[in-house]
Length: 200
Length: 269
Image (tube, rainbow over all chains, first blue to last red; front, side, top):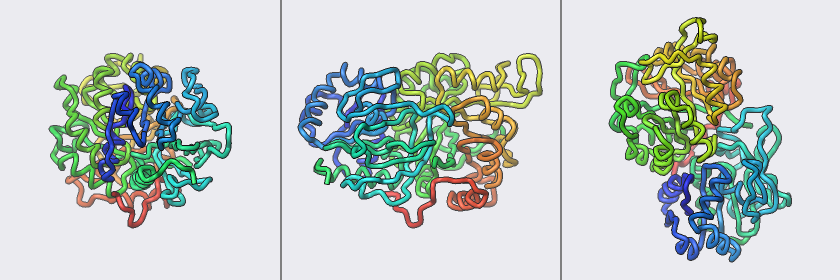
């Protein structure tokens, strides 16, 4: 679990601990460089997150591992930084998944805060654990719009439908806080821990 | 569809949940970790934890209890009380909270809201307000005044002006605590809840006064709140009977209020 200033990584750690999944919270670039599975958790702002990863020397080993095919899970801001660009502070993203991050329109309350239904739209080893009608916990003002519709694994309605789970090669990311989505979220973390990084 | 939330509120003193009436006469209920675990198993949607004496005693928040609760509860968890700086906020997040609630400290130093929103995202910063009906008077056009320090100190600030300022500074959620209704079990103050919900575009949380599911339903419909804070109804020893989350949700469903479905036989891992 990648630890950076502005993250809530400990919550993810507590959830993995409860599941009996060995994990380590680290801000050490050498540990990231040797990781066999990576989680980028987060509450936070896009720019602060990327700046923090860069300044702490974590971005380079993280990028190298993800390119090498290591299974990667992004959560919340860990999903939003994956794209090419975010409207939040007009921030360039990591560009690992093609697409943009946009702000919800102001015709509804922003941020979206609460439990909302996640509908899985494409079969994937990590999301197979999600039951039909699963409700997960969201706290977000921004949402991703992947360029390739095939990268959308799950959708959720807040006004229009938006992409709530992303799947792209060895990358999976949830807009909701899996670690705070009760038994449903814990099941998703468990299936990520068992995933080999191959999409089907 | 985004559902409405039931938030269990803990007023914590020395690691134990206590229950007050109109911000006074706290009686002991249970250790915070034990009660949090019980409510998580009962499928509560969210928990908010106020370290209620931290601010008045000018000490840092009880991080040990925050950490212990976060170890047992895998639903969102907001923490407030005694937050004075960006570093305090970061410590609370590191202890396992998702959101930080600021109240009296934000009145004294509104810039803390902006700083928190910039560092952690605005969704992370909850502005909690203690409001009291004082009648319309100069400086208080809404008739509701903001109080701080456990409802002890009047600020001379208008409730609606303060929540709008809070939103502009970056608060991602507003909690409206009615001092008049707190602990009365007579229902939320729907007027101020609705007035706040109409004045801001972030989610608004109703707090203070829930006595039954009809009160909660009213806050979430007429009051236009996105969530309702409840405490007595769930666990107060002052009540003859406490109501399980499942029963509250069934009663809300009957009033047409959508909530996260209560799942039969759901393993809470």
